[in-house]
Image: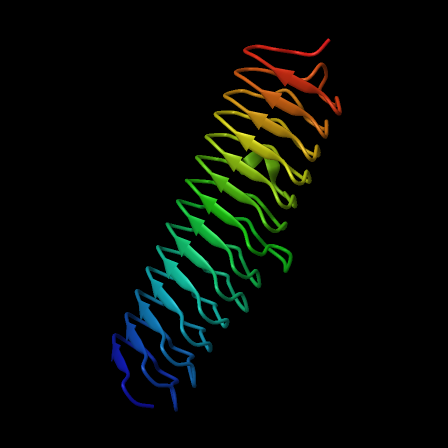
Length: 239
C-alpha cells in the first residue's frame, strides 16, 4: 500500500495493499489488510479493523470494528463494534456494546453504552448516560443527562421516542412514539406509547398509559395506566 503512516509497536502490522491510512499507537490498525482512508490514534485503536473510512481516537476506540465510515472519539468508544457502520461516538465508553447497529450518534460519557443486537439503528443520544442501557430499538432521540437511559431500564427496546431533559423517559422499556420534554418528564413511563408530556415532572407518574397529552408543571393523568386523557395546567390532574 501507499501513503500510509504508522507509528508504534505493531501499528498497521498486517497491512498489504491498504492505502492512505494513519496508525499511531500500539497495535493501532493491526489487522487491516486492504481498508483505506482510516485514522487510528491510541493504544489498540481499530486493532481488528478491516473496513475503510474509519476514524478512531482513544484507548481501545473501535477495537473490534470491521465496519466502515465510523467516527469514534474517546477511550473504549464503540469498543465492541463489529460490522456496524456510519456511527458517530464522542465520549468515554459511548456506544461501547454496539455490535452491528448503524447510523447511531452517541455523544457523552457512556451514551448508548448498552446497545446490542442488530435492531439498534438511527438513534441519537446526547448527554452523559443518555440511552445508556438501551439494548435495541431504533429511531430514538434523547438529549440530557440519563435521558431514556439508566441502570433501571436494562433491556430497553423502545423505538421512535423523543426525550429532552434530565432524567426524561428514564425508565422507558418498550414504549414507542412518545414525546417527552422537560426535567423528569415521563420519567416512569415504561410501556406506554403515543404520549406527549411537556413541562418539568409532566407525566412523571404515568407508567403504561398511552395516547395522553400532558402539558404543564407536575401535571399527570388520573392513574398510572390511563389512556386518551388531556391534562393542562400546573399540578393538574384528571379525575
